Structure formats: structure tokens, C-alpha cells
Length: 134
Image (cartoon, rainbow, N blue to C red; front, side):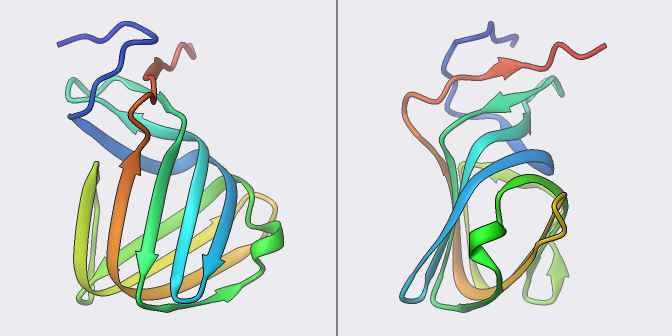
């Protein structure tokens, strides 16, 4: 099923950290929120595109890194659940257990976090925009 630019579709996306753009990272007590300005995703047909208003929340944990400069393009990322790499993170999705998140930004900033619950969500009004790169 193809989706035209601007259409809203709630299922069938997979987050691709690489080239995603982070608006900011916010910590509140034991919750870390990574808010994406433009999350790089693939739809069910494998078409690459972008979604705004995507949030990754990691709860019941702690982090190390510079939140002030944890913005911009993600150069490298890793999610581990119970010691295993999570290769595909569906949108929306939730994970529970021993979780590790590591992000390296194009500006050199690194962020590492541990937690017990991860949720990946998109705003109800998030719109899929296909990647038109050649």
C-alpha cells in the first residue's frame, strides 16, 4: 500500500536512526525523551521517508552524556534489550527489560542510557513525507 505525502498512517513504519534529526533530548527524574524533528523511517513497502513528532522514551533508568548538544543528525545508534541488539524498532512500539540506548551525533556528542522500559511513539497528526532523493 503506497502512501501519498501528507497522508497519516499509524502502522507499518520502522525507525532508521541513521540520518534521523533530533530536535532535543530531555531528562526528567528517571525518564529520558529523545524528540525527533525528522525521524527517518521505512514504510511496510520499504519506501524511505520522514516523520516529524516522533518521541523515544526510556524510563526507569539513568544516562550519561551532554544533553545540551544532543541535537541534530544521528550518525550512529544502538539499542540493546536483555543483551541483544534490536535491529528493527517498529513505530509505534514498546520494549521492557534491561535496555541500553547509545547515540552518537554528527556533531560528536555521545549519549548513553540504561532503562527498563522503552516506548517509540508518533503524534496523531504526524505525516509521512517520502524521501525524494535520487
